[in-house]
Image (cartoon, rainbow, N blue to C red; front, side, top):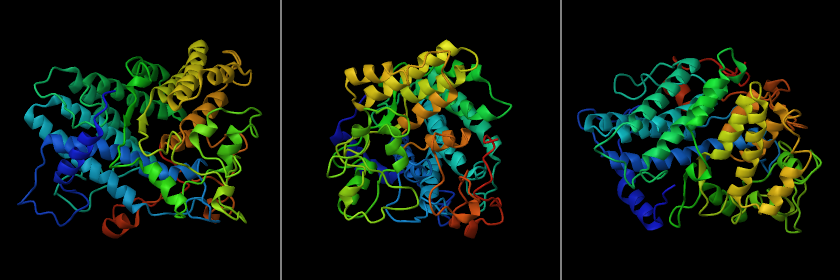
Length: 470
């Protein structure tokens, strides 16, 4: 992956970020007779960067649902799976998708098919984040001035749109171009070959989401993987820089300043420290902070910190760890995730391939976050992990994937496809009584949508599944 200089990155943001096109769907005060058209370079800066930011924004609440994080306060709304209006995240997703719609149109008009292809892949990515959280959402009528109350498209139809965008993006990036993507690309620095791999990896991800439906085709998933990432060098990620910290680092910094956040769930700590599975995971100290006494102590979801006298009595995100250092990347799509997808897709048709992919996924994640080779070898030789192809279960794959996908919103999709069946995984204390003892499976629509577009907003509850969650 091509890394942009930090100074150049900051200059791009400062000079171009605020010249991007206005939000058609969310800003009803735009004047269509006096439009502002941003150049494709400015749009690429904004959308590649904001796609990473949106990964964090969605992950900041899904990480409580899959019990990576827990609130230090008892009965906190995000912890107990209450109805929460994520208006800001919804707006950020639509801001990015509106700019991507403009980028696709301008790139097509300019004959810049590589820009168009990258924009189509990022549109699929942001639309996927949105659909997987809320289900049916506005799309076909969302990005023009024809209406300020766009209709909601069906979630299954939107998945067809996501896959169509990926196919179109792959096709555009496969062609010659007279306008190459430049350093305005925060993800790959203009490398079209990596964008092609990214598109195929995402195609495998979204095809794999059909696993509980009659439309699931594991061979199609594996075919996409064959054209996806070759190693962790291909990962789709945004590197942060001194003028713009990784947003998880900001959570850690704020927590240290007593604006509490980033507390680690007891469920995650116990899965990593040997309590749940009977063996230690060497990744734990690289992912989360220890207490002042050097111990790893989680917080029970929904129960809060109880009588903990000080911050140090619980583990939290800390600067210096892989995911929450100031210059850490936000991971959008990775080789290790792709290998877990491969392990799942191959499980019923090629057990040997599934097992090899499972082991390689663990190895790739451990290497990614800096585990020593001797510790990697020891973990992968543990008979509880190295179970052999014949004894491998789908539970093994989902367990290890849950560990590796720390803080990523994709983990909530996995949890729902897996029916939250991780070992010793229980609903949080003080659970929202409307859930009747069950885990939530979707978000309710934001208050902003209820007030401005209420006649089109679907009537759903937290227990109404997304179409792929059968």
